[in-house]
View 1 (cartoon, one colour):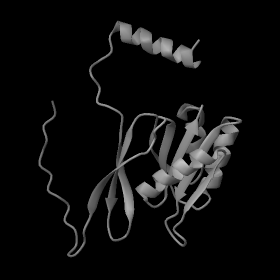
View 2: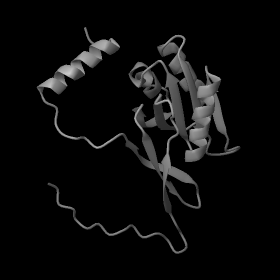
View 3: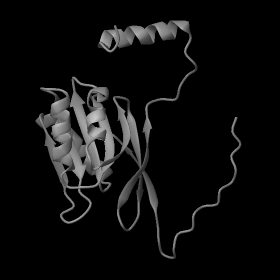
View 4: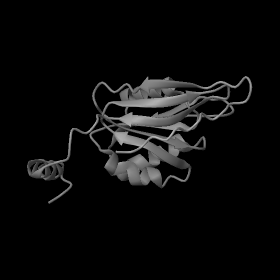
Length: 177
């Protein structure tokens, strides 16, 4: 096991405060989601193009938290319900320069490479259909995502039957012959 060494807390300047919050992502249908960080107002349009160019006919919603000027949540997509869900989650997180993608009948593996190639995308926090909680830090300046909790804790190491099941699932999804 690992030994935890004591690391003293980073002192804040006099009067500075920081609060950590845990925000549960709303995803009642266990749809696939991608949460990431970007840096420019055209993020919503560029991710939209990356999505439709990766999977023709894909159903999705994108919400991008603008961090300056108007400070609005910019919303795009091909499905009104998914656009609304992406916007609700982006508003709950409210961290500047973050984006939220919700998709139906597609997997992150289908679009993640294209999203990562969008010039303004800086980071991907998660791409999953698991239950997700977002750890958000809030200061006087705003909010930022510190990390995500994506799914459950492993129960153990896979055995031969688990390997067989994994390979069958990949074939069922069409990712292996």
